[in-house]
Amino acid sequence: MSLTLYYHPLSSFCWKVLIALYENDVSFTPKLINLGDADERAAFLKLWPVGKFPVLRDEQRTIPESSIIIEYLDQHYAGRTRFIPDDPDLALRTRLRDRFLDLYLHMPTQTVVFDRLRPADARDPLGVADALSRLRTSYAMLETELPPHGWAMGDPFTLADCAAVPALFYADRVEPLGDGLPRVKAYLDRLKARPSVARVLAEAEPYFHMFPQEPG
Ligand SMILES: N[C@@H](CCC(=O)N[C@@H](CS)C(=O)NCC(=O)O)C(=O)O
Image (cartoon, rainbow, N blue to C red):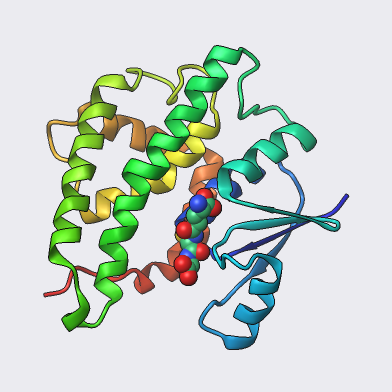
């Protein structure tokens, strides 16, 4: 079997999958996509008309969506890190935390970031305020729900931790984690120190200047 990952190093959702691949030293061919290039975009849309990456190809099979890709890797390329626990109840709670992190932390962050990329007369201050408010609610929930040590679901490093890295890293850039969130901050520090995560961050670093700053 041979894997190709269509991705971009700055793309937050691609980080989830890169972390999973690096955790288990799964070999794959990285295919960096520049969606700003008309030909690359057209070729990518043929693969996945939704036009969002990451997308994984395994021989002739196309697997989109970061969480689904990680489950696919867990099923077909299992290694020392298992991303979905065997225990059905823990598996369900892991998937819930993954959904929570994607939908209520990662997506509101994207709302804020994408707004910064719009022309000044097309910005949506109300949408941004709603997204920032959602982030604060999600931070407060995480502060009470995260274990004091280890990972999002306790001892095992799971799908939820893959989701947490980009969600928290970029959320912290648009709505900095304040002093009232010691557990979330400590968890983010532990994540950043994990080798698979440190590698993803190091590979993204040359592209960080492309991250849009808050409009002045
Ligand atoms: N639900 C998708 C979200 C993927 C996503 O939003 N990808 C962004 C990059 S982080 C993207 O492809 N953006 C390009 C665009 O919207 O044109 C997943 O989990 O993979």
